[in-house]
View 1 (cartoon, one colour):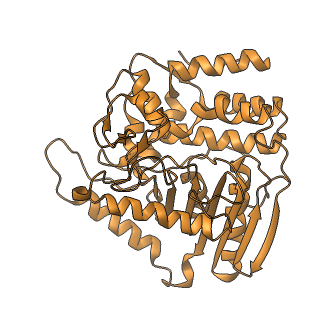
View 2 (cartoon, rainbow, N blue to C red):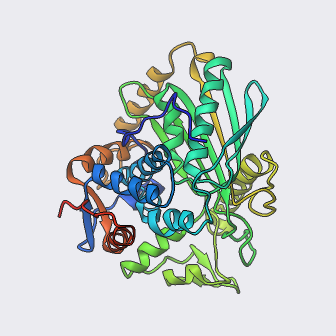
View 3 (cartoon, rainbow, N blue to C red):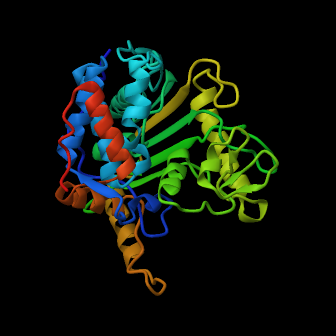
Length: 385
């Protein structure tokens, strides 16, 4: 079953998330070094779609998946963009690990809640349909909540919550999968690197979009640090004895585990751990799967929420959002900081810039895309330099 059409936009979106230099997402929006090449966004999207079609994904579903992946790269969230295209999505569909032709099924539980079986398909397709459904409920009843199970990784949550913001709604997303994170004071992998995202529309400003994993690191960040010869700071990852790991390759050790956000008791690690468990409850328990520690129905589970703002605030919401943003911009800053930004602002600028100047991709990603093109018989004509 293909994703619904009501809110679908088969284009590279022109708006996105992120904040100032202090935003946790901004490590993805640094200026590239010599080992980066720039790709044209439109041609990169076409390459991504064609590669998925070559392994059996329908054109509509391939177009949607490609748009979401490239959207992440445009926003500066390079850990969730085409870096994953070949090694994770294309190859897993090709090998039959991910179902390239899923039949989505929806069970409406109440007028404002539903459960969606993703049929082990690409997480993008089920997630897009789930947020569409939540928005349809919100349009009619004020709010909607949809849980997804039997799914796979669905990329950056910012895309889905931004769907709601573009429609003038609040949007939230929670996802859980895997179990790479240690408990505070614990050893070994226990909990998934569970993520959450939230979006709210503004008036004359880009929407507020906050997208995060409540942990100190993720796998693709470790890959990028390793490729660039960087050392991982202490407090990101521990080994099987609870000692800090500073070699990025150590992230992938069989006994290594990521630490929750906060890293230590003195820095509030319980807050990051609580957020991880909250996502397990909202995305895992509510779907009947159980989340990252129990896992009964499938690889990944997600939940999506949309709310029609006019139900509560009487039409002043976007005006108030703009007033809040202007106050942030006028607030005093430390030396070397131009102004305070909010989640959503920097990535909106990144999208505009990268449509003009291209998307910077690490040379290792570039080589993998070219190898994919050669393997599938698709020209990799995407480079601007």
